[in-house]
Image 1 (spheres, rainbow, N blue to C red):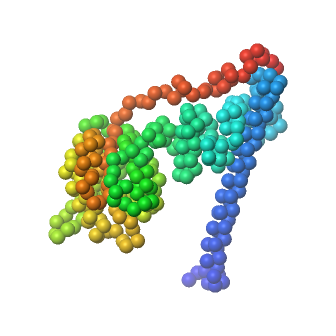
Image 2: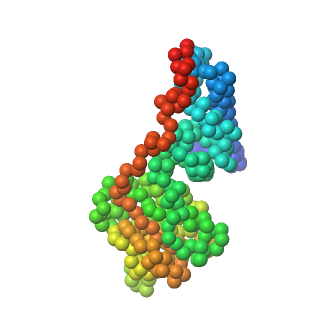
Image 3: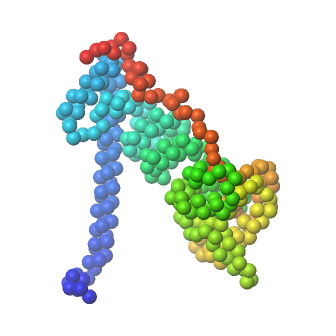
Length: 346
């Protein structure tokens, strides 16, 4: 034992651990409070710009001068560019009560708010993505990706028997975890890729894969071995969902869905429940990912199965989405919304 360790009083380690937690918690509260103050300040600035435009006829040149004067007064402060001032104005105009629906905007970082205002078209969807961003602690890049990939249309869209096989509220929570389709275009594979090629690529890109699966998925293993009466079986992918408190078995099929795929997955779920699941875990869920599926065939196949599972498609190659800027404002359009007759005002 070192002399440094020997001189520590009893209980020092526990006290240090507690102190670290309290400092970290206080630091987080300070950051949240600072963000709240910043968002409220930006909203006030935007509100006052709007008021002066309507009452005094301010033009775009005044915004440029305001930016210059503020940056001269606060040279170390970021966020005072003319572009950002126009976003503040747009923020106050579109969120007059400082909220996206029922979600308070000051719970989000500033550029999350800018992303919602400029890349999401309707107030309903802005509220949806604001809620998800807060609950899932998305970065700005993740928020932009989820908007681009239209998560709101895919989440909870898989064909499942979860409502019939799981108790409430677990059934509702699990249904929202599964998507359809899953986007695997980050793998760089063509449409004709084989199952093992897809599986290998998913493991190589495990960070992207987990992000596409959604919050709560923890990777357990690939080709996980099961032994039943001396015979070996290997599951493609095994995850544990930290929020659902259950294992999730994922099976990949490089072709169209067939009813017999359900039998194989049902066997794996029974084996996991018997050999891996603990008494504290909830029933294991299965997810069958196919290249294509026919909805009614999948529904019939699931209806007679006791184990909870879902069927969804995956996409290796996707067509590019319609440009978002066809219906959402750009900075130039925001500038154009200022009184035209005062464009040349100093």
